[in-house]
Image (cartoon, rainbow, N blue to C red; front, side, top):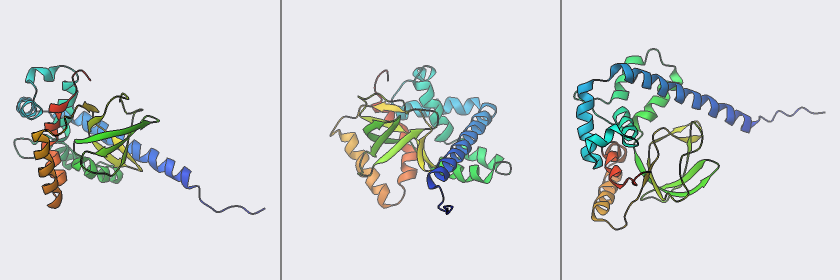
Length: 221
């Protein structure tokens, strides 16, 4: 009887995915812990005013759910401090000597991950098949912790994800959006988006302006 030397690709893929998920979870946990001890109160007050202005909400709303979660996520990954750095960038620079290479590699992807709006095409096995608002490509979004929390009637979402292992893993709150068609502001967004795409500055543009999409947040999601 011949012993097969054909590698088990599916098993290898599962193991790689499990390790990548573990690395991302460990990285985000370490960052969350760092944030608790390195958050400047004055920076946070400044950030709340900036976020509220961009997101079209009141600063008082940021003390209550779900706005508190939305703000905390934006503050952790998108807010630019008085000295011109993002907090996650500061965390990586401080901890680069002690973080494993696999987490350092993932940190580069996390650094550039932006809040982006997507059309929801379908939900299957706890994952969402989505399409970027002005593109035709399809993308499968899944969660590190279980199902992507969405109802069947949600047509658009705002979310931050990173390519981890073989999956696009969501690591922000999933925000249901209600986007009106043919709105003037939306047309302006599309023009700016396409211009930045041509200049190869789309990700930076989304990183700086992603919170603007919160104006379309569905009430009481």
